Structures are given as structure tokens and as C-alpha cells.
Length: 127
Image 1 (tube, rainbow, N blue to C red):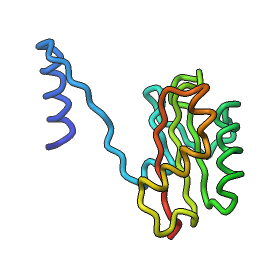
Image 2 (image 1 turned 120 degrees about the horizontal axis):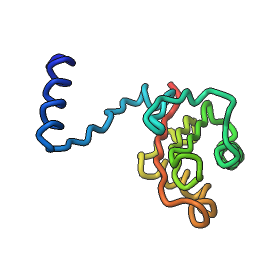
Image 3 (image 1 turned 120 degrees about the vertical axis):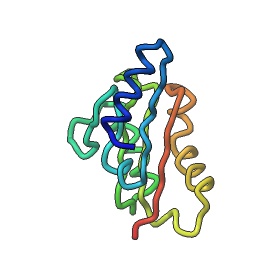
Image 4 (image 1 turned 180 degrees about the vertical axis):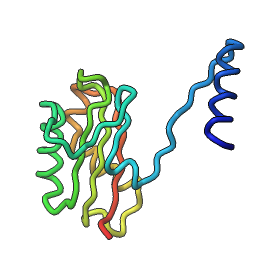
């Protein structure tokens, strides 16, 4: 379906008061470098990390010192209640995704318990 046709279809649904929620589809390549935050894309490589983001990065760096990439983005609008985390490390080699995520959760256990209500985790093994 073409983009214009899709937008016209969306417009007609909105006009008829049938609201639709469109969620972006993420691929591993997209999520690694761009996170959807507050309706716009933020490049996670920028040096403008919040205090909460930097704290989580430091904790993850301590736990995964050989990590090729660690990226953290506050997706709660700045209050620090929800984060998207991407970790690419050799430590995840030969581990199932569930175990990889458990390692990240274990590392951030105290922060999750005290400050967060949501966390999105994506892990990868370097190629």
C-alpha cells in the first residue's frame, strides 16, 4: 500500500471518529541507533545524556566492560521512570535472549526497584 493511500485511509478513519494507534515497527538495525522519544527521533550517539541515562550507562559499563556498544535513552519525557537500553557485548555469546535480558536486569536491579516503572531492553552479540 502506498504511503499516500495509507495516509488518506488514516485520515478518513480519524474523521469518522474511529481512532487508530500506529506503533512504529522496529528492526534491530533501527533500534540500535535511533530510539523513538516523545514523537521525534533522537540520535542515541549524542553527548547530551541525562543524569539518569549516564548513571545506567556507568552501571552497565561496570558489568559489561568489554561491551562494544551501550546505549540508554530516557523515554519517559525526562523523569527517569522508563528507559530503552541497547547492549552489544561478547558476554551474550551462546546465551538465549531471555538470559541476556536477565543479565541486564540483574545489573540494574536496584535502579529498577527504586526509580523505574518500565524498561525496554535489546541485546546483541557483535558480528
